[in-house]
Image (tube, rainbow, N blue to C red; front, top):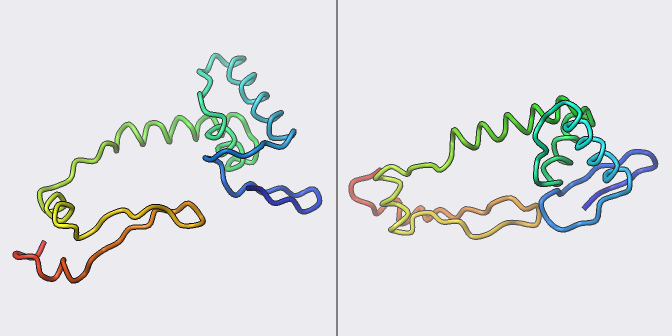
Length: 122
């Protein structure tokens, strides 16, 4: 989903099927050419490229650095190993993921009643 106000354009979603504007396609292609010209690996997902380009005001060098930093963070952080308390709360249904809202944010349900009944308290 994207909003356009005259010359201003703002994309609201990146990671689901949507058509790219001609300028967005051009920006993605220019980014890939920039990567090749500088000997960098080209990211596989156009959504990730476009998100990084928007976040960095279409600066290819800053966008590439952001993509690399995100990938490094993901490699260092995930998968998360739950502690015994977290595993116990998951098994007892204290909290669970219930999908996503209309803005694609994760919806997490916490059962306070089940949490309060747990012995011992986590």
